[in-house]
Figure 1 (tube, helix red, strand yellow):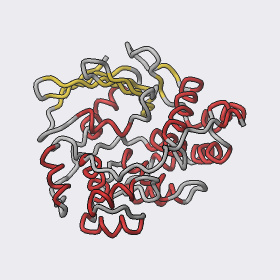
Figure 2 (cartoon, one colour):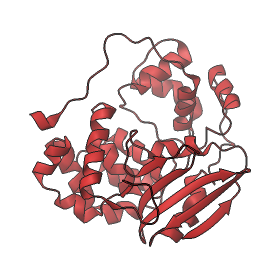
Figure 3 (cartoon, one colour):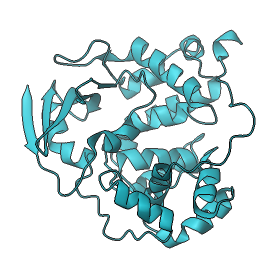
Figure 4 (cartoon, rainbow, N blue to C red):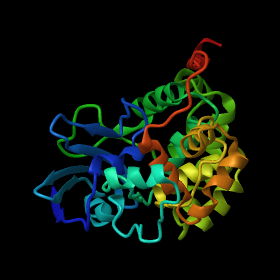
Length: 299
């Protein structure tokens, strides 16, 4: 086991900053214990590792196990938004200013530095409801992931290596509930994993990602938000986001084009602005039943 203590500059809500890296309540790569401690399994450049993060008297305490332990501790501050510059953000809408004042520790964006770890679940989440995608993620991680090193909670799993994603047979994608299009997109991306992981900037990653079949603006943004901590990567094409942003800022729902117009004053921080929209709690009235998760395994 290796350890590190780190004191963040300014307010920091550890759970909120790490939250985007969790994919559903049963994510096998993530666990939050009743005392607030967060466990995270990761495949680092040095191999699999387990990171345990707790907070005591204003300091973040990290413990790590496995071949990737040192890498996880070295990058822990970045994962917890060290270096995320919020100084250029100005709230041009009253509701966002109020949200920022109420939640000063929740507007920062961390970066994991791991592209495939963010890309696979993002592809699974394409054009489906969250429950459907998270069910597939859980099944695939339990089937093809490896146990997390160290005294990790039972069931914590490390994501498979790229070559494993490439070799998953069609029947197991079907058993996971992922149809052929998403399965093929993940397998294709896995062939280019080394190049994707080597991207030095969010802009370079965006170019590489969107050159691959099946990966568009939404998927690229979801990956860059998590892997690079990009505060300007807007999830254009999201089923709900434009409506929520429009309603929170104007009282009326809008589409992607309208959302981008509303976010123009936040250039450089447009993703951060949408995060604050989420913290306002403002949502357009629900009309009709929610979409149900499909189950491709029955097709």
